[in-house]
Length: 139
Image (cartoon, rainbow, N blue to C red; front, side, top):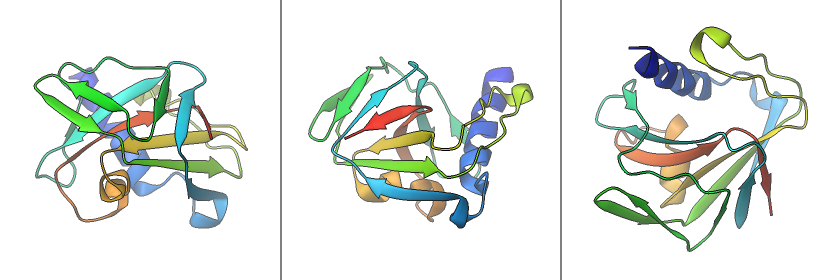
């Protein structure tokens, strides 16, 4: 139950946005490296609020690049999108749900098979899988 709550909280944190749009900026990158090895695979299937994880067969990597192929158990995706969010002010975490704070200037990366999937957190596509890096260095 706690794992499910952690994933739901993470998804809610990302979906609701921990800040207003003037508190962060988004841009696309060609690669992303995890700064602290906090890398999670998130899957959303058919329900707007239901997420699960970790993805079956997912083995986190330190660095991801456009064109890389990632195995998710019986499924393989090729990275076609790396979306970076740079926070312009500090964001509080929530220990109850395993959400770590993000300092001003901190960056998170969403990695997916398509740009649509990378943006899925805030659009209406209901079924998607993406990799979320809590603290990343993009290039």
